[in-house]
Length: 406
Image 1 (tube, rainbow, N blue to C red):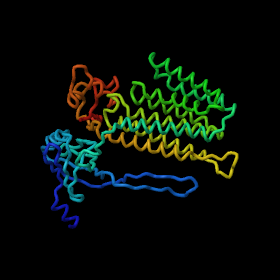
Image 2: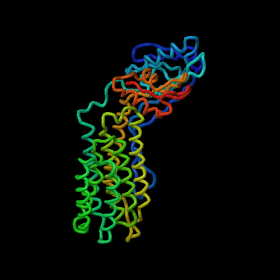
Image 3: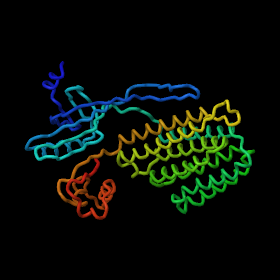
Image 4: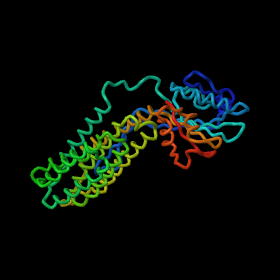
């Protein structure tokens, strides 16, 4: 069938989860397809090995209009039906019938006679998958433990610490601990100070018992990630501690120390990210913030150890990253990111609208989220839209407002 026949004979339709059918005016189309894949790099081997598996869901951005005298009513009906969490069936002139889910819907009332919508639409599986009885948190914790074991072995087998390393590592331990000062409560302060004391004292025996030094300093990075605080505070503090560990890299022994302890910092971020408090991941943006910080930290780590490598022909300074530790950490990061993506799809869906007339916080909260007895919805609505004090009683026409639905 030619493209002209397709446009003439196949009508663009959306059947939402509640079974209602909509036939707006479709504008344009494009798709993107990604694959589940891993990249493996090998020292002294050019290029990388790409292990490509099955394709991921196809992303199909949908741009369409409701037009005519009743376009506002059509738009309202569409948004009401879009709140139903069941899958959509979209019939597209170019792509056929697609079963999928919207992840973001944007509405623009740019003219009186039409309402424009932009929808991020993803093809989806039609059954619950994967079906697993194993707790994701337990899986991540096991991989965190594995990274830490390889980290201890890496330093113990590779480094040859001397008395000159003692003051450097002690100072670094104190600097790392200082990044968590704002996280402590009276209940956690004493325990953490004891951990710090144990870590710094063990450094005196780094030549004879290096494994104890690494294990005790790993605890300084891991413990704050378990505090009952917002996940954003925990992972940002761990990131600052990671930067402090990175600052130690100068000589050969320092490189082993950085490779092992920085891997623990990334493991701590991973573990904290999959152990949020109830209110941490309300929207996809909240989940994506954790994902971005983890990936940015990991990418910086890889770049740092790549730059630290020294050819084996330089016998005195030769250094290369530990393949077991690197593979273990890579697996942890991939599994954590995959879990965060699952959380993102389970989080509430964002909607974006432009305010049609001057209004205020109370009216908008009532309209888009509903008022509750404790004003929790109002505070949430104010936070996600960054509404300052000067806007509480007057939010101007044209301001973009975010809200979310289950």
